[in-house]
Image (tube, rainbow, N blue to C red; front, side, top):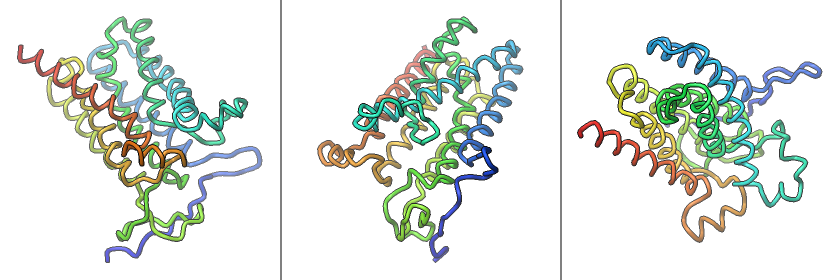
Length: 268
């Protein structure tokens, strides 16, 4: 065997000095957005676009990601609880963020950004922003790994992780790493199409690839994951899909439509 499983018991807090608490998740989140900012700045300079557009778009995205991901968790996964404890909805520090909610929040924010700042189409903005966003998603999933959360079913594969901090005694699929690697591949694909081809001129093509790659991989990896909420078991038993998969389908379908439309327009 390549490995004899991985015993994972990492403290999610990197620094804890009195009132100062820095968690790996927050650090990775910040690093991801900083690197993403630098990448988008380079892209905007390449296209001779106003640099202040970069500053503004990242303010929109950061705020939308946090609010959208939190509300996504509240309404998609935890409404039975939060409907009884509404005072905890804004307590982000207690955990609970949903990527689909973050995606919806970003879409709304970029619609506003496109109307108020660039005066270009929302899809034009998305064709550029999603390149660094795919890389940010890699950092976020690695943050999930450091938190010992969102992992998979039991496995006998040699790279299985025993998440000891959660009281696990058997190896589980490290689905955080599976997703991070998938998103990394998506990032390199998008980066190639932006820098090496004329894809950015085919409106919707790059954004469509992003949706297919990110949410398509999420759909299939969900089969290996443990459910995030107990009620999802009944959902799986009734329709064969969990909430993450159900929410991914519209994004993938929209991505396919965008790619098809962009290629059809290019041919025409």
